[in-house]
Image (cartoon, rainbow, N blue to C red; front, side, top):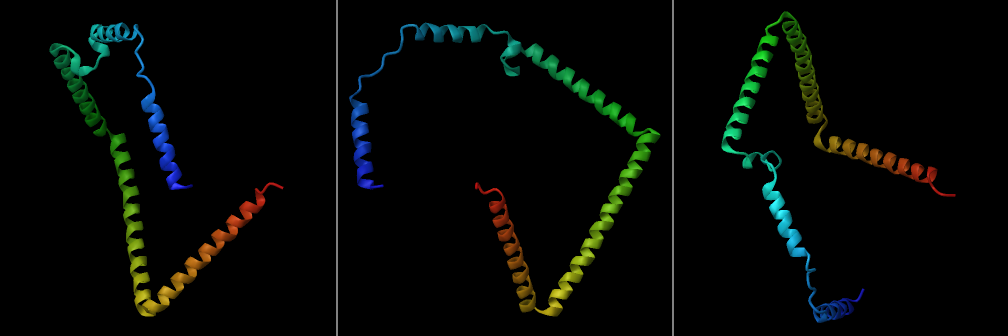
Length: 154
């Protein structure tokens, strides 16, 4: 595209738009807008949002929600004191101990890998890493080629 031509076209469009007469709003627009505003102000408080509720309703709803939350918290606390909950907690604790063991194994394997890298040297490790990355890229490229070939329109 020619930037000079684009500038000329933009200037011509600007001139044409500025030459148009201003648009007048329909006569029914203002009464409809005023009616919509009045209808919104007359809407019940329950449909306009919690902040517009009367203060008494807001305090009562907050107290009710606080009481409900406290009751649920107390019920949950009592449920955790049962033998089934204690057994479940012990099973969960065992699962987390298995995760801790897996983390320790990964830490030992990582330390062994780090010791191997230090023993072999940085250059050798870098060369092996580049060979692995190159092989991955080659596999991705060949796979992509086969997918394109398989879905090609014939």
